[in-house]
Image (cartoon, rainbow, N blue to C red; front, side, top):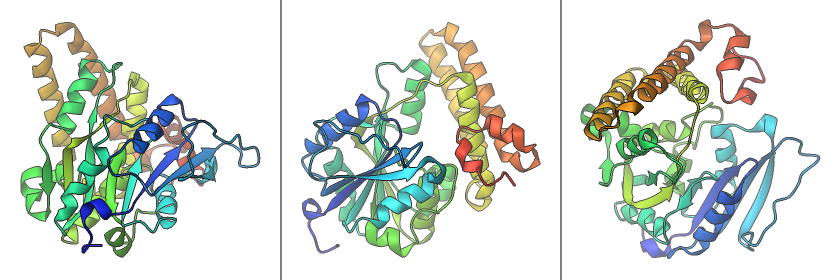
Length: 317
């Protein structure tokens, strides 16, 4: 693979989907417009009942698209993507979510550019807010996905802390040979399979590249309770992989985001949004703390808090 020119790399795109909307078809259309086109697109569709499948159809479904069905009870953030990777022989594995739409035709080209450095094992894209995003969501996207690219290695841990391992399978690529050598995504995790993989790569001596010029449109409008549930699952993943997340100041980064967002609202005279920031931050923090301590909570309460209820089908403890 290293002897190839970047433009000659084979890339397979792997997209887990569940009850997709029109964004998926916009995504598929934009993948066909790329300057470097995918070899295969693997859609991993989670279905409520695998015996009663309603197949996806539409003009976006071309010959290079394969659909593989997964029973809802078998979906896992790590395991499902691991399954998709096992069906690829491409040089590069590219993972996306069904609601991330490439901004232009350069997404794949820009994500591949850092592989000129043989030590770069993964790259990930900048996420831009869509038209429905409010000022809080827009600032959060700018905070997590700035307009300057960065290549991160083990040498950056003291400076960047948890951000060293930041990577997002909303839109990310991995060298398949390195991915396989390091064991791939964990088979079972409620969240953060991308950061767990990035941690493994960083500690194996590889680098992670954030490509600000590779851009996808992707953002969410969450209610306060949805924020709690999402951050509950985040806390659970941190408790389950404490060697990655709990010894490196994760909460400090969250506090910095809140402080910077508050200053951003003040600077832009958006004072009426400050109560919303306080409430949303409070729900996030409460959810995260509950998730960190999920082993101490009653099973029924865990099920009420989580966003991924199927994850717990075999029990909480």
